[in-house]
Image (cartoon, rainbow, N blue to C red; front, side):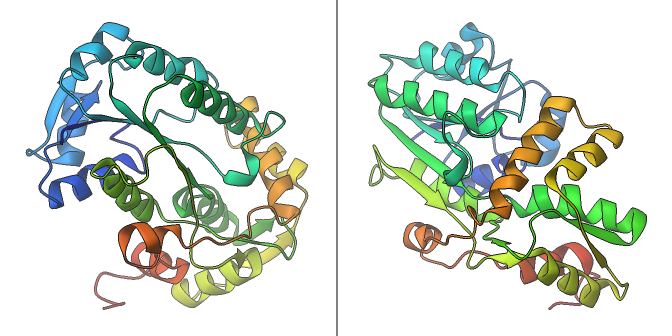
Length: 290
């Protein structure tokens, strides 16, 4: 079974590729930056250089392909790009495994990027293409590593916009493992799989876990989602993306991402990675958590 991987150089893509290689598959990857892709993915991967927004590049890369893993950057115009891929592949027979977003936010009224996911999912389901949709909950790599920890390192404070509620964060490593398993089996065709971490974690619990690993206090400061939006814009984030995160934090504050599924266990045969293990790898010296 040959798979084409789109979005192979982000948070999830390298894990999809490495899991496929580990299982003996020979994935093909469509990338714009060949040097960066080779550095991230290694020499065993078949690279095709091109832009996935170019229909001809997608058609050429998808030749003789069984399954296409559809992932594109978190972007204002994400829907246009992904719908273009779906249109190009229509009637090709290729199955599309789409990486979507947080299950509770995929609605027509949801946050910006999630509204786009909702539209793409509807088109994919109605297109007649074989498909699987993966809906991972919030990534540890984004909320914790990208947003929370840099602010804490700069100020010694963690802004808490969700009160006492928790989020069942998932690690990109587990999403990649699920995606690879789905790509190599037709067992889940036509299904939407909702992926979460093992349990919800509050910001107060995260602050404690970070302090235990760094030895530095992490003061928890209660703020509103609107205040986080203002802070993100001040740090250079685009207005549309900061607004997206504000809307996501409002959902988190309402407890909409505290739910837990056993999908990672069911698909991969192992439990999802804990936030403790994630922080150990991120914050402790090599070998300290061995």
